[in-house]
Figure 1: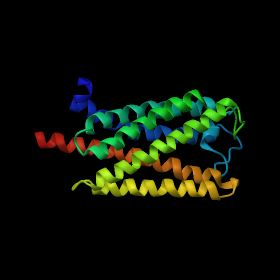
Figure 2: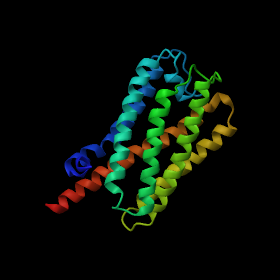
Figure 3: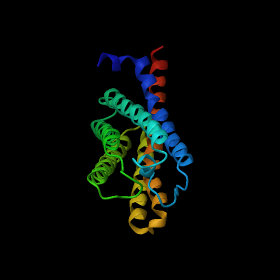
Length: 217
C-alpha cells in the first residue's frame, strides 16, 4: 500500500488509463488490418480476438496491454480517491475496478472460439463475462454520476459520467433494435463510450494530482 501512497508513483499510474485506451484502439485498428474481410458494421469487436481469427495474435497482444494498464489504473484510482471525494464516488471506483478485472480475466480465459457465436461452452462463458462487464459498468457509471454531481468542484465529471451512461443506454437500445447488419456499430457505441470515459477519468486524475502537488510547493 505504501507504494500507492507515493505521490510521484500515483501520478505516473494515473496516466495508465489513457495509455490503456490507446492500446485498446490499437487492438481494434491492427486487428482489422490483419483480418481480411472483417466488417466493423456488422461484426463484434470480439471477433478480432476469436481463437480462429486471423488477427488473433496481434489483436490479443494489444488487448492484453489494454487490460493490464487499465486494471492497474483502476486500482490506483480506487486506492487514491477512496476517501478524497465521497463514499458514492468511491463505490463507483470500486465497481469500475471490478469491471476491469472481470473484463481482463474473463475475456483472456474465454475468447470466442470463432467469429460470431458458435454456442460452445467457451462462447457461452464469453457471453456471461459480457453480461457481468455491462452490469458492473452501468453500476459504476451511476455511482460516479451521483458522486461527482454531489461535489461542488467536480460536477462536470458528473455530467461526463451521465453522458457516458446515456451512450451506454443508446448502445443497448440499438443492439436490441437494429438489424444484425449494423450490430458492430451499436456495440461500438457501447464499448467506445466506456473506453473514452476511462481516458477522460485518467487525464482528470493526473490533473487532480498535478494541482495538489503545485499547492504543496
